[in-house]
Length: 355
Image 1 (cartoon, rainbow, N blue to C red):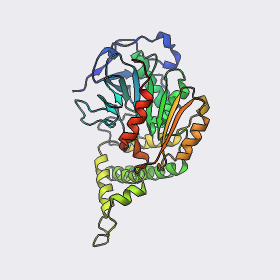
Image 2: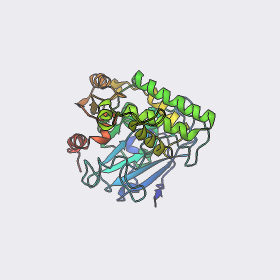
Image 3: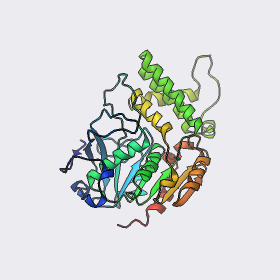
Image 4: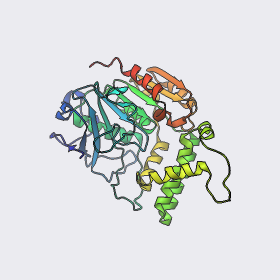
């Protein structure tokens, strides 16, 4: 059973208004193992574009050793707070990187992951309108969690894909809160072709809402998304191009995509996907405003976050520690698949953090 804990301190306020010296470590940080942290969202919490959230709380999850240096980990729009395999969810979304004796070693570190807004609820199948949410909004929600926990310093914020965008936004808004940022497959702005692909996905989802064919729309949009996450080389190696016996039958690659689409139907709703997809394309930060040391990791085969965009980001960051460019068969999904490379980078980045 998931244990949801609320620390008995005053209700959360805008962390930008609180000095770091006013924070006191929460007793939650003194408890080993995995447990949820539930923080109320203040009534006056406004999104950048003037709206408000339907949800009343932000939920994070702590993993690892009590009182250890804290590392924030955030992934793509499908990621959640279950970054490591737990008693309730089985395999976490990044268990290859986070675990006991893993690169982000739960014997050495305390890890915080969190659920992105919006949370429309587990049974939200209706046509709720999407919200306009920025990566800065997500960073401010994370700050509510950190402030609630009394975290004066984040030893590292490691973000991949959408999580990398949030890490950059966090560094822009809260320049002194994170000792360092590790940004994987994310730049300071989206590429127009990536926006074009996601725009088609959004129109598929909107059509599903208009016609009442929600499950089909989510599945089809996911199929299209999968073709952008991976590379032509991987598809060429993986799938037979032989045609089926009759027109209208599925090709091998289509069977794979359809299975991925079906598997995704229970993981999101059209409204939530529309919100987060738009948030990806709304993302903008000024690299020059990020003073924390930054490690960038980019993959030359990534079509959603082209390496040239990451090179531009690297050139504009005032405190670039390291920029790793690597080939990969897996494109944008390389951070989930290239375990050895990712492990080497993370081990190097985290080795000097004081215990």
